[in-house]
Length: 152
Image (cartoon, rainbow, N blue to C red; front, side, top):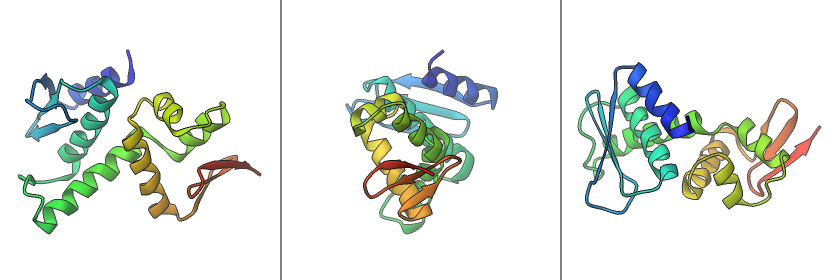
């Protein structure tokens, strides 16, 4: 099973049904309604994987209908679900390991981590705001302003 299928299995094991459906748009999009998550099937697997992770974040952490993003509290809940998804799919240690394996550009890094480039960049920004300009890993330092790994 690939990462997306594993995440679907995890959802099912928690009583969450995941359905892929044509939602009429060609953009990554999902909806969490109770114990049901609907994922737009018009996008590629990496996009569906990232959307599913965010929708699981909504299932676990947000309450009610937050579709009106002009409301501050709804935007806050959206942000909470996104941060949850970043941390579930990509850890700083995953980024370090991928760079140490020889990955030297953002496109290959996203592919190695099975996420979209945009999701990866947003994850990096999240970790930068969480840790500052660098993350102290188990064996290496990960810098965010210029994505790099330094041994120590």
